[in-house]
Image (spheres, rainbow, N blue to C red):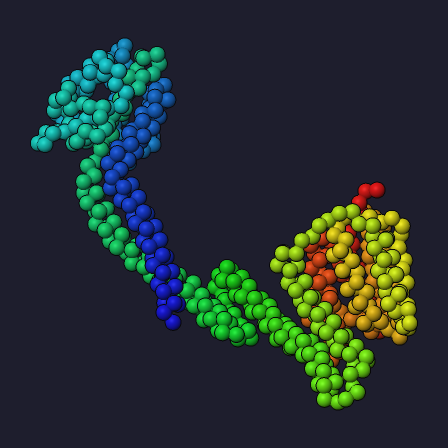
Length: 481
């Protein structure tokens, strides 16, 4: 599938670019740290070492018998210490061999010259340079600098004073040229950089493969699902996000499967509900046309009843479509629920006074709620119609309305067959019937009830037990009296 290859290529490219960018950044930092700052970092470390050893000597001036070997790091760090008593001009040298090697001949003269320069300046840290072909202290006046970036630096010196300037201490440490070290590091870093890039490519490939493979499988299954196969199973592994996506797609497939089945049931139910009255109208009309004497009031009434049934079905379909699309207006106002229920009771009591049905009303007086009076009347009519259709042997329908805290609770109760627990969440769907073989009703009434109640932000539900009947209820906030 070219789409999948495009997805994979894009994903691989993005991960590859990200990895190369990261490695390039890290290698650049490594080059800057190891090559660009090598010289200055090394000089900084040597300066710190010389200062540390010099301070140790400063803190131990009272110990005349201290040995060079007792001074930590003096030999390991190639450091010599010169101590001068500014009163007696007596000098003490620690690591004398290194000092002789640094200065060469005429040590005393050059050391005296060095102290003279220090006495005439405020030098704290300085560096000693060596021109090509010359050695340290050949011309001390021209070799001293305070610029650590000066070329040909071969030594670093630190000057401090103690005992109220009675003593002057100079620490001198060798600074080894790092050119050879820098060349070595460059060779190593070239190899390391190439190695890092290759490793990044390999890691990027496997990461992209690990991510793209399950995504490809999910995409393929999604395409299969788009063709109407809702039994497909999505399997995702490797990453939590992919597993969550897989679970979501499985849930979506299950919901689409249910929706598809509901659509098929809807088409079947609508076709049946429309065909039945049309068949009756057509059949009775043909009989009345073809058989003399069949144009009786009874047959005409059948045609009228079926036409009314067809009109009610179409109106119900249009009504629920308007409600769910938001084109139907809900005008809320204060509604006297007690009067509304009594009105419905009187209507049904009149319509069915010659039937076996019994209607019982149990309501508190003057219950006011906020809502659309016409829509709430429609809700109660549909619930009562539903109760009449499913009333039990006692043919009794009970309508209640009572205060319940800060809300009014409405109940429409029948003593019919009841509803199974697993069917209760489904009865609010359009065209859903608990008894598939029973033709009573259009299957739209409870769906209209649900839509209107949700537009009123009402709580609603059904309490039912098989063999004992059902209680359809809803709650609306009470208005302050």
